[in-house]
Length: 190
Image (cartoon, rainbow, N blue to C red; front, side, top):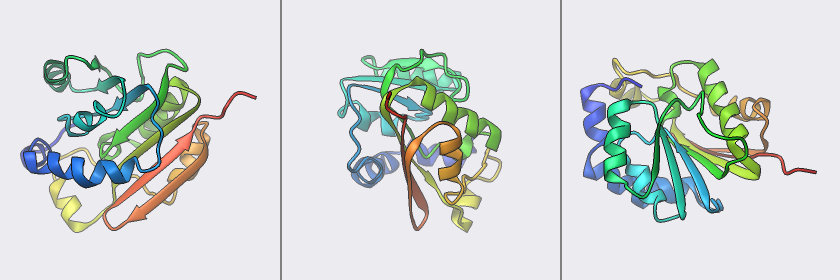
C-alpha cells in the first residue's frame, strides 16, 4: 500500500482524524450493528480504529505494512493487531460478527486482489454478519493526492455484483459526491 508523503501526512493528521470521527464513521456505520467481535482490514494510521475501539468490545485489525502494524500495536494495546494481507487473512472461518474497511480498498493493488479480499471478508464472518465500509470516488483532487500511490479505484456501480460473487447477500451501495459506502451480509445458515 505505498502512499506518497503528502498522502501519509494527511492521513496521519489530527484534522483527518477529527473528520473521520465526526463525519466519515457516523455515515459509514449508520444503522450498522457491528456486534461484539469486529475485524478492521487496512487501518493504516488508525483514525478509524480510534473510533471502532469505542463501538465494540473486541476489535482485531489486520494491517499489511509491518511498520504500521507495529505502531498500531503500541497505540492500541487492547486491540488484537495482526500483520497480514486482507486478500489472504490469517484468521479462522466464521470468527467475526462484522468486518469493516474504510478508505483503503483503492490501495489494494488489483481488482483480483480486491475480489479476494471480499471473499476473505465473507469467509471470516459469522453467518448473518455484516461487511461494511467506505471508499473514495474518482475526482481530480483524488487523482492528484494519489500521484505515485497505489490506486485501483473501486467502481461503486460494479461493486454489488462483485460482493455477491464473493458470497454476500443483501448488498447495498450508496454514493455521495466523492465517496461511497457499502453494506453486505454473509448468508445466515438455513
